[in-house]
Image 1 (cartoon, helix red, strand yellow):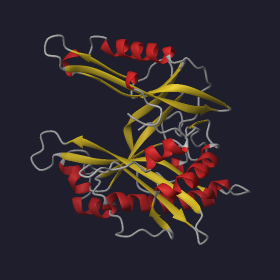
Image 2: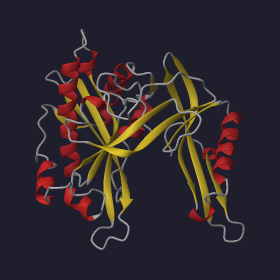
Image 3: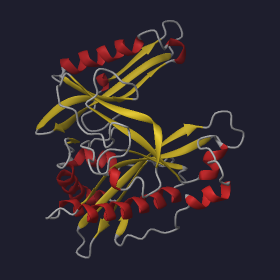
Length: 326
């Protein structure tokens, strides 16, 4: 909630009159987003929460109206947000996919179910990952890599219809944040170097923990979400889709290994970007949820979300969405 460009006035809360307890909150950040050939500055609403007892009281529209008013006062006229519900009207819709890393724990938390005719040991074996990565030159990203990663991302993201325009300061905030002593790590970023020390590939994922409700054995489920990635394989001429598919499968396979080493239980991804080239091969299962992308006060033709009309993964018509909202 505090990337470069953030301001205190973009954090809006509602408190109870007597107890002064916070009962509703909304936050936004200013971002630059390219929608096809035009770059716009908009407010990205990334957090909206209303107390359980006050839901259905129309507090959410009031909060959204207030953040819109504040944005307009600072010459920002467009908004960007995502939601799991359908509102008029989404510019794109993506589907969630889940890849088990700790199947036994997910099963004990009722996050996954045992397929008919199968046994727990079969599922554990199915979703097991190797102990070590296989991509040559793969290492953890350092602040010194930021400039090279931003250049690679700019070129890679130019292939999509909607994508972020990220500065080096923003990239540092999102991919190489400073972790204070005693603070838990929440973002993992990696790069691949060739023999000449050039950055050829990059990927990242972040952590969101979910509570395991009424479970005597487990308190939380550690969920990794695929964040941004880029590879120069997609930028070579002539374009080789098979080579890109192979490279992305190698990179994401290593991402799963690294996530498992970081004690994650499940790895989530959406059907955006080039994810359709590796989701099935890396044993991601289609989820029930969808994520709808909305642009406020900006008219744009629909952008492909990586799924067809039947909500199935469409490898032939990949997504035009290159925007990930953490």
